[in-house]
Length: 561
Image (cartoon, rainbow, N blue to C red):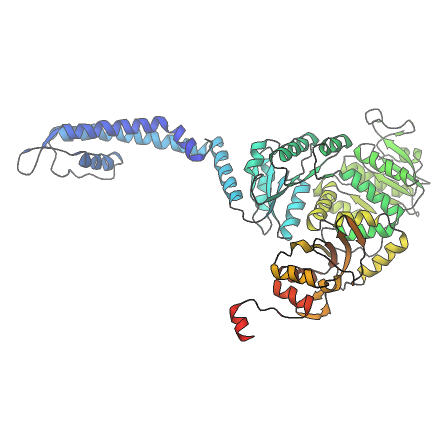
């Protein structure tokens, strides 16, 4: 009912009725008016000849009195027909042009094209709800991994920006409210190739509505949602949302991890960085007196986790009553030197500028450093807008809290390597000596700065030949790491984690045996990742690395063997 063809026919019903009526009357008139043939006998025009003549007469293509010359009565009727048919055509064409310029019709036409492009997708894709800073970063990063996405956003300018700044992969996009179930269905929620929905709007209620709709309409897809309050996160969790990401909580945990275990933070940074860049040295935030400016959602999370680590904090807040700040709060924005002095910036070792205004946050950091001339100060600033990235990078900050980047990193880690989140969780609990060993093993792999993690599922090997090899052979981690071009060579990678049923083994030995159903998380360079995926998906390559024998599957190869 909302198809473009239906809408055109609906809007053109009166012009079409008029055209059909005029054509019918004219055709009937020509068949009833008597004429003469070339012998002078009375002759009546057939319906076919009448329809043929009215058709080219009404469109003013040209004239020819067929099959015989007309008499005066027929010519008078033709004159009447010309005027009425031309008027009907002008009315119909004008109505059609009006329809084509109508915004409602344009939207339906765009939606129809969007739905057709989604229906034509024949490989797995994710639906991204919200194409703000986070959605833009995520869509481009997923495209670089050859992962298809579909975008919904309620702002047309964001969809237009996607058309301008679209990555190499074609991304179907439509301007619509993703919290409306029909729009999610149009985006392919029930499509057999839809593997997940990522809700990234800046409104918790909208994200909650999306979560409810997804779980009720297609509970088999993976659901990742953004939440900016603990209440919203708890509400989403009640609807079995697979992953809930609160950027403020995530960053606060990372800052606390850097204080507690700089090495573990370095590992976390290596494996979740979108640009796959290795940080040269771990961060080492100092313990002591910290000043937290801004006690909103971000400030509350940072203050709570700093206190977990035994850090003493003082809060600076411009509206303490509105944000439920503690009684010891220093009232002010933090941009004034007097406010920072009252907060004890002179003895502070760290400062957090966490307001929702980028200019104020940079001003806080600059003022704090001016008051701490000649003394080191660990500075953390919240960046609210992606467009301000250049000036934040130029500010020489110790850490930048950018919600878009944080959420994108978390989601990329979940999508790229399903075991990575579990691995990082286990790393946080390890001792510093163990983490230092891991750092040395990982950093010793690379001559470049590229870092990749990937997951191999042994139960993905559904080939009959591979199942037979697993059944009779003893396959270990070292076999998985053999180069399929020369099994005597090892791929440039290391195993990080093995999941056997519900048990996990950190940094497994290369001689550890594997069984069908195991999942292994590897870390290595780009070429090693592709070669291993090829080995695990090609029965001939797997036969070679596992048994040292080449398997000939084609009739021609078997003949020459």
